[in-house]
Image 1: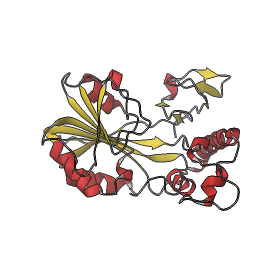
Image 2: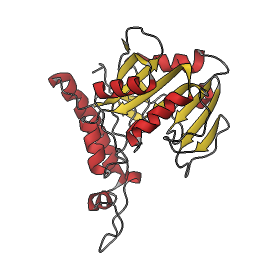
Image 3: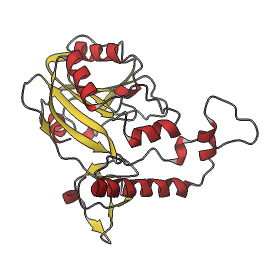
Image 4: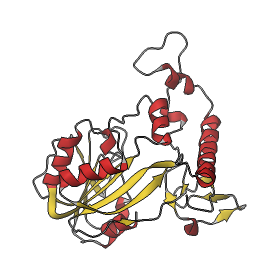
Length: 275
Protein backbone atom coordinates (compact mmCIF):
# COMPACT_ATOMS: atom_id res chain seq x y z
CA UNK A 1 0.00 0.00 0.00
CA UNK A 2 1.53 3.30 -1.13
CA UNK A 3 0.47 5.26 1.96
CA UNK A 4 1.94 2.64 4.29
CA UNK A 5 5.22 2.73 2.35
CA UNK A 6 5.29 6.51 2.78
CA UNK A 7 4.69 6.12 6.50
CA UNK A 8 7.47 3.56 6.83
CA UNK A 9 10.08 5.25 4.64
CA UNK A 10 9.23 8.92 4.70
CA UNK A 11 8.04 9.37 8.25
CA UNK A 12 9.92 10.39 11.33
CA UNK A 13 13.38 8.82 11.41
CA UNK A 14 12.99 8.05 15.10
CA UNK A 15 9.41 6.75 14.91
CA UNK A 16 8.49 3.65 16.90
CA UNK A 17 6.52 0.95 15.11
CA UNK A 18 4.55 -1.96 16.57
CA UNK A 19 4.15 -4.98 14.30
CA UNK A 20 1.29 -6.71 16.12
CA UNK A 21 0.78 -10.38 15.29
CA UNK A 22 3.99 -10.22 13.30
CA UNK A 23 4.83 -13.87 12.73
CA UNK A 24 8.00 -13.86 10.64
CA UNK A 25 7.54 -10.14 9.90
CA UNK A 26 4.71 -8.19 8.28
CA UNK A 27 6.88 -5.90 6.16
CA UNK A 28 10.45 -5.29 5.05
CA UNK A 29 12.13 -4.21 8.27
CA UNK A 30 15.33 -3.21 6.45
CA UNK A 31 13.56 -0.50 4.42
CA UNK A 32 11.96 1.11 7.45
CA UNK A 33 13.12 4.22 9.34
CA UNK A 34 12.64 3.90 13.08
CA UNK A 35 12.53 1.35 15.88
CA UNK A 36 10.45 -1.79 15.36
CA UNK A 37 8.93 -4.01 18.02
CA UNK A 38 7.42 -7.25 16.69
CA UNK A 39 4.82 -8.86 18.96
CA UNK A 40 3.37 -12.35 18.66
CA UNK A 41 2.15 -15.01 21.06
CA UNK A 42 4.73 -17.50 19.78
CA UNK A 43 7.92 -17.08 17.76
CA UNK A 44 8.48 -20.80 17.25
CA UNK A 45 10.75 -21.40 14.24
CA UNK A 46 11.10 -17.63 13.62
CA UNK A 47 14.71 -16.47 13.35
CA UNK A 48 15.88 -13.49 15.41
CA UNK A 49 16.03 -10.15 13.62
CA UNK A 50 18.60 -7.39 14.04
CA UNK A 51 16.09 -4.85 12.76
CA UNK A 52 13.28 -5.67 15.23
CA UNK A 53 12.95 -6.48 18.91
CA UNK A 54 10.71 -9.54 19.25
CA UNK A 55 8.37 -9.68 22.24
CA UNK A 56 6.11 -12.61 23.15
CA UNK A 57 2.86 -11.16 24.43
CA UNK A 58 -0.92 -11.39 24.18
CA UNK A 59 -2.57 -8.76 21.98
CA UNK A 60 -5.16 -8.03 24.68
CA UNK A 61 -2.52 -7.20 27.35
CA UNK A 62 0.41 -5.48 25.68
CA UNK A 63 3.43 -4.86 27.97
CA UNK A 64 4.02 -1.27 26.81
CA UNK A 65 3.28 2.12 28.37
CA UNK A 66 0.54 4.40 26.98
CA UNK A 67 1.46 6.42 23.90
CA UNK A 68 4.55 4.33 23.10
CA UNK A 69 4.08 3.96 19.32
CA UNK A 70 3.78 6.22 16.28
CA UNK A 71 2.46 3.43 14.04
CA UNK A 72 0.74 0.10 14.69
CA UNK A 73 0.61 -2.51 11.92
CA UNK A 74 -1.81 -5.44 11.99
CA UNK A 75 -1.15 -7.30 8.75
CA UNK A 76 -3.59 -10.21 8.53
CA UNK A 77 -3.59 -10.62 12.30
CA UNK A 78 -6.91 -9.23 13.60
CA UNK A 79 -8.82 -12.21 12.22
CA UNK A 80 -6.70 -14.44 14.51
CA UNK A 81 -7.40 -12.51 17.74
CA UNK A 82 -9.84 -14.32 20.02
CA UNK A 83 -10.15 -11.22 22.23
CA UNK A 84 -10.60 -8.70 19.43
CA UNK A 85 -12.16 -5.80 21.33
CA UNK A 86 -9.56 -5.81 24.15
CA UNK A 87 -6.83 -5.96 21.49
CA UNK A 88 -8.23 -2.88 19.73
CA UNK A 89 -8.47 -1.08 23.07
CA UNK A 90 -4.81 -1.91 23.68
CA UNK A 91 -3.86 -0.54 20.26
CA UNK A 92 -5.57 2.73 21.17
CA UNK A 93 -3.79 2.81 24.54
CA UNK A 94 -0.25 2.27 23.23
CA UNK A 95 -0.71 4.61 20.26
CA UNK A 96 0.33 8.26 20.40
CA UNK A 97 -2.34 10.94 20.01
CA UNK A 98 -1.24 11.61 16.43
CA UNK A 99 -0.47 7.95 15.74
CA UNK A 100 -1.43 5.85 12.73
CA UNK A 101 -2.77 2.34 12.20
CA UNK A 102 -2.50 0.00 9.23
CA UNK A 103 -4.77 -3.05 9.07
CA UNK A 104 -5.27 -5.76 6.48
CA UNK A 105 -8.01 -8.36 6.92
CA UNK A 106 -9.62 -11.04 4.75
CA UNK A 107 -13.14 -10.67 3.47
CA UNK A 108 -14.87 -13.20 5.68
CA UNK A 109 -17.42 -13.97 2.96
CA UNK A 110 -15.00 -14.30 0.05
CA UNK A 111 -14.35 -17.51 -1.88
CA UNK A 112 -10.69 -17.39 -0.87
CA UNK A 113 -11.36 -17.14 2.87
CA UNK A 114 -14.09 -19.81 2.78
CA UNK A 115 -11.74 -22.18 0.95
CA UNK A 116 -8.95 -21.40 3.44
CA UNK A 117 -11.21 -22.18 6.41
CA UNK A 118 -12.52 -25.35 4.80
CA UNK A 119 -9.16 -26.86 3.87
CA UNK A 120 -7.24 -25.79 6.98
CA UNK A 121 -9.94 -26.46 9.58
CA UNK A 122 -10.40 -22.75 10.19
CA UNK A 123 -6.74 -21.94 9.81
CA UNK A 124 -6.82 -19.86 12.99
CA UNK A 125 -9.39 -17.41 11.59
CA UNK A 126 -11.75 -16.74 14.49
CA UNK A 127 -13.08 -13.36 13.32
CA UNK A 128 -15.12 -12.76 10.16
CA UNK A 129 -15.10 -9.25 8.69
CA UNK A 130 -17.04 -7.34 6.08
CA UNK A 131 -15.80 -4.10 4.53
CA UNK A 132 -18.11 -1.89 6.59
CA UNK A 133 -17.83 -3.80 9.85
CA UNK A 134 -14.03 -3.69 9.80
CA UNK A 135 -13.91 0.08 9.22
CA UNK A 136 -16.62 0.84 11.78
CA UNK A 137 -15.05 -1.31 14.49
CA UNK A 138 -11.52 0.04 14.03
CA UNK A 139 -12.64 3.67 13.89
CA UNK A 140 -14.81 3.23 16.99
CA UNK A 141 -12.14 1.55 19.10
CA UNK A 142 -9.05 3.49 17.97
CA UNK A 143 -10.76 6.90 17.56
CA UNK A 144 -8.97 7.28 14.22
CA UNK A 145 -10.40 7.81 10.73
CA UNK A 146 -10.03 5.90 7.49
CA UNK A 147 -7.77 7.81 5.09
CA UNK A 148 -6.97 5.17 2.45
CA UNK A 149 -7.87 1.62 1.45
CA UNK A 150 -7.38 -0.91 -1.31
CA UNK A 151 -8.76 -4.28 -2.35
CA UNK A 152 -6.40 -7.22 -1.96
CA UNK A 153 -6.43 -10.21 -4.30
CA UNK A 154 -5.57 -13.74 -3.27
CA UNK A 155 -2.63 -15.75 -4.55
CA UNK A 156 -4.09 -18.88 -2.89
CA UNK A 157 -0.63 -19.25 -1.35
CA UNK A 158 -2.04 -21.35 1.48
CA UNK A 159 -2.44 -24.27 -0.98
CA UNK A 160 0.93 -25.64 0.02
CA UNK A 161 1.79 -29.22 0.91
CA UNK A 162 3.62 -27.98 4.02
CA UNK A 163 0.30 -26.83 5.50
CA UNK A 164 -1.09 -30.35 5.57
CA UNK A 165 -0.16 -33.42 7.57
CA UNK A 166 0.38 -36.70 5.68
CA UNK A 167 -2.22 -39.24 6.78
CA UNK A 168 -0.85 -42.25 8.65
CA UNK A 169 -2.26 -45.68 8.00
CA UNK A 170 -5.09 -46.78 10.23
CA UNK A 171 -7.01 -44.63 12.69
CA UNK A 172 -6.25 -40.89 12.56
CA UNK A 173 -5.05 -39.56 15.92
CA UNK A 174 -5.12 -35.90 16.96
CA UNK A 175 -7.55 -33.04 16.43
CA UNK A 176 -6.94 -32.38 12.73
CA UNK A 177 -9.78 -33.42 10.40
CA UNK A 178 -9.33 -36.32 8.03
CA UNK A 179 -9.32 -34.09 4.92
CA UNK A 180 -6.19 -32.25 6.09
CA UNK A 181 -4.32 -35.51 6.61
CA UNK A 182 -5.29 -37.07 3.29
CA UNK A 183 -4.54 -33.88 1.37
CA UNK A 184 -1.08 -34.07 2.89
CA UNK A 185 -0.46 -37.30 0.97
CA UNK A 186 -0.91 -35.60 -2.41
CA UNK A 187 2.28 -34.83 -4.40
CA UNK A 188 3.77 -31.36 -4.20
CA UNK A 189 3.05 -30.61 -7.86
CA UNK A 190 -0.69 -31.02 -7.30
CA UNK A 191 -0.74 -28.04 -4.94
CA UNK A 192 1.24 -25.90 -7.39
CA UNK A 193 -1.20 -26.88 -10.14
CA UNK A 194 -4.19 -25.99 -7.96
CA UNK A 195 -2.70 -22.57 -7.15
CA UNK A 196 -2.06 -21.92 -10.84
CA UNK A 197 -5.59 -22.92 -11.89
CA UNK A 198 -7.28 -20.99 -9.09
CA UNK A 199 -5.25 -17.85 -9.81
CA UNK A 200 -5.98 -17.96 -13.52
CA UNK A 201 -9.58 -19.13 -13.34
CA UNK A 202 -10.65 -16.69 -10.63
CA UNK A 203 -9.26 -13.68 -12.45
CA UNK A 204 -10.70 -14.68 -15.82
CA UNK A 205 -14.14 -15.09 -14.25
CA UNK A 206 -13.80 -11.79 -12.39
CA UNK A 207 -12.90 -10.02 -15.62
CA UNK A 208 -15.53 -11.68 -17.81
CA UNK A 209 -18.43 -12.13 -15.39
CA UNK A 210 -17.80 -9.43 -12.78
CA UNK A 211 -17.42 -11.96 -9.95
CA UNK A 212 -15.20 -11.51 -6.88
CA UNK A 213 -13.55 -14.93 -6.77
CA UNK A 214 -10.01 -13.54 -6.66
CA UNK A 215 -10.73 -11.05 -3.86
CA UNK A 216 -8.90 -11.81 -0.63
CA UNK A 217 -9.80 -8.82 1.53
CA UNK A 218 -8.77 -5.22 2.12
CA UNK A 219 -5.95 -3.05 3.41
CA UNK A 220 -6.91 0.01 5.48
CA UNK A 221 -4.93 3.03 6.69
CA UNK A 222 -6.18 5.12 9.62
CA UNK A 223 -4.92 8.34 11.19
CA UNK A 224 -6.28 11.33 13.12
CA UNK A 225 -7.11 13.48 10.07
CA UNK A 226 -10.59 13.94 8.63
CA UNK A 227 -9.61 13.75 4.95
CA UNK A 228 -11.75 11.94 2.39
CA UNK A 229 -10.61 8.29 2.11
CA UNK A 230 -8.55 7.51 -0.98
CA UNK A 231 -9.00 4.22 -2.78
CA UNK A 232 -5.65 2.95 -3.99
CA UNK A 233 -5.50 0.72 -7.10
CA UNK A 234 -5.51 -3.03 -6.52
CA UNK A 235 -3.13 -5.54 -8.09
CA UNK A 236 -4.23 -8.65 -9.99
CA UNK A 237 -0.69 -9.99 -10.04
CA UNK A 238 0.07 -11.54 -6.64
CA UNK A 239 2.91 -14.04 -6.38
CA UNK A 240 1.78 -17.64 -5.77
CA UNK A 241 5.04 -18.35 -3.89
CA UNK A 242 5.53 -15.39 -1.52
CA UNK A 243 2.38 -13.25 -1.80
CA UNK A 244 4.15 -10.17 -3.22
CA UNK A 245 1.75 -7.95 -5.17
CA UNK A 246 2.76 -5.62 -7.99
CA UNK A 247 1.11 -3.50 -10.65
CA UNK A 248 1.28 -4.62 -14.26
CA UNK A 249 3.65 -1.71 -15.11
CA UNK A 250 6.22 -2.99 -12.60
CA UNK A 251 6.50 -6.45 -14.17
CA UNK A 252 8.40 -7.74 -17.18
CA UNK A 253 6.67 -10.48 -19.13
CA UNK A 254 8.23 -13.82 -20.03
CA UNK A 255 6.77 -15.48 -23.13
CA UNK A 256 3.91 -12.95 -22.84
CA UNK A 257 1.94 -15.01 -20.29
CA UNK A 258 4.35 -15.27 -17.34
CA UNK A 259 6.54 -13.14 -15.09
CA UNK A 260 9.12 -13.68 -12.37
CA UNK A 261 8.28 -12.22 -8.97
CA UNK A 262 10.55 -9.23 -8.17
CA UNK A 263 10.74 -10.42 -4.58
CA UNK A 264 11.32 -14.20 -4.69
CA UNK A 265 11.90 -14.80 -8.44
CA UNK A 266 9.13 -17.41 -8.53
CA UNK A 267 7.35 -17.97 -11.86
CA UNK A 268 3.75 -16.76 -12.05
CA UNK A 269 0.98 -16.34 -14.64
CA UNK A 270 0.80 -12.74 -15.86
CA UNK A 271 -2.51 -10.89 -15.89
CA UNK A 272 -2.53 -7.91 -18.21
CA UNK A 273 -5.46 -6.04 -16.66
CA UNK A 274 -6.30 -5.21 -13.08
CA UNK A 275 -9.58 -6.70 -11.86
